[in-house]
Length: 183
Image (cartoon, rainbow, N blue to C red; front, side):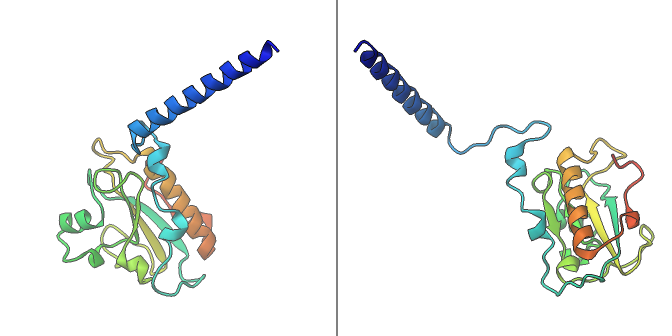
């Protein structure tokens, strides 16, 4: 008999604390915690890599046989900003297949496919690149000669993108090229 009032008190306190916690969470709203060196809430807002590599044009397993990763040489950017910084007429002219943003021009780790990828076009060789027509180029928005090194999120997303491309197109790991200072 003496346990009944105790159980009732415990249940009442549980109900009060759960209600208080729910009210507190609703008052805080839908704001993710502030980002630190790596914040899972912002990482989960990014599109899955499998969705990013889908293209408008048909994809053939033997179309690509090499992957090259390079830095943009800029502090900030996304496809549109890199287009204007390079003096290109339109985003279709950017000479890579993917851009991985650093948070200063898009979400940190956001992978943007370019028109060349969406249409499965080869990129145009120039002085800074000597790949073949079967090379996938990935641009990481960073300038390692300055303060803007690649972020942890960019590195993780680049590795996930490379792994997904490697599996989808049966690319040999020995034909994946990184910048000399890749982590």
